[in-house]
Amino acid sequence: MGRNALLGPTWRHVFRNVWVHNDLPDDRVVRLAAVRLILGEEAFVCGPTAAWLYGIDVQDRRSDLVWIGFPNGGRCRQRPGCFVREITVDETDIVCWDDVPLTTPVRTVFDCVRWLSPVEGVVVADALARGGLVTCDALARYTAEHRPLRHVRRVDRAMGLIEPLSESPMETRLRLLLVLAGLPRPVAQHVVHDASGRFVARLDLAYPRAKLAVEYDGAFHWSQRRADDRRRDALRGLGWTVLVVSSEDYYRTPDAVIAKIRSALAAEVDVHPEMSAR
Image 1: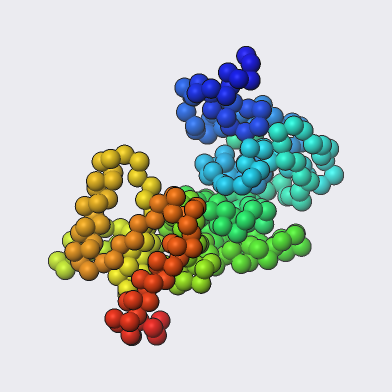
Image 2: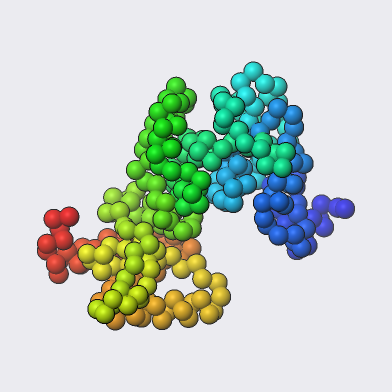
């Protein structure tokens, strides 16, 4: 089969030199099979590729490479399509799925926070914490036991940013966009009830005292969009300000997103001066 055929709509590019037929689902079985094509003896999957096997797609310019680790003293050799590094690991840092060795969830978070951007490292931590595979306490203990390793302070800084309630990578990215810009940390998955106690909505991010909701618009189907519109209308009827952020907003005009939310918070402080004491 020629390379031009692989670039057509029939095939899905997984990572460098590996394609998957579009009839196959993007699930763990397929992902493991793709990695198995490249992984050699003594090697294990680590970093963002381990996160990928756990179901998390990180954004990194090296995401099309398979991240492979070798234990110290192993036969560490570069290979096409791979990002290979020698890593200090214990036997307990490695698990095996269908004959594919990879780093444990806590070690995967530890490495991704050290090796990726601050935002993408927390994306991995949030997702694995949400799935119950990692806890902040377990990560803190692991970090304390591995302080001689490089860039551990990055894990220390990330600990205060992890939010197990975050339901998607884009929610994490949006939350960190605000926090790293110096805005107050919003509440994740805040539940709103009406005066009679009836459930109205669960918000991606919220500033409850300001009655300000910040939502990521990830709906692709018209019915989901219509449901979101009805929910947001109900919130506005209860006095909430609802700001909706799209993928285009986040990636193309992040400063405008920050300014809009900062302005909305400032307006609420002007109306309710007691909020400035927070």
